Image (tube, rainbow, N blue to C red; front, side, top):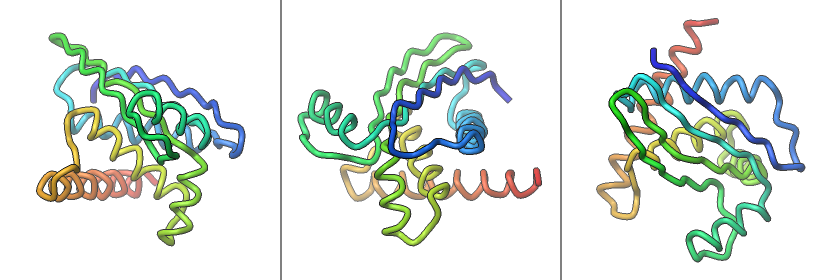
Length: 154
């Protein structure tokens, strides 16, 4: 198990981010970092924002003037035993909306988007069909393994 430096910044006002959700995100990121990083210490920040803030960030940094579910900003600063993966920005309003749309829980959507964004931070993408297939397989593999570990811990 590697050391995780994790900053969680809850800037959104529309949904109350429960402490158990924060704990879930901490466990999930630690689990995923252990699987996708070789360094002893991994740093990442996760910000929870509303639709308007993510729209502004999407417009300012990607030139896309619309609301999205998640943005990933890779830092990819790596040294011998330390790696700063970068920043993840999650729109909690979109998490709730997509959970309802896809017929699963808020937590399921939150964990999926977290894994999705972490994979972006380490270079995965889904612009081409083959890239998309590879990324989706890795997402599902990590989510299933995390769920098994969570079940065993209960």
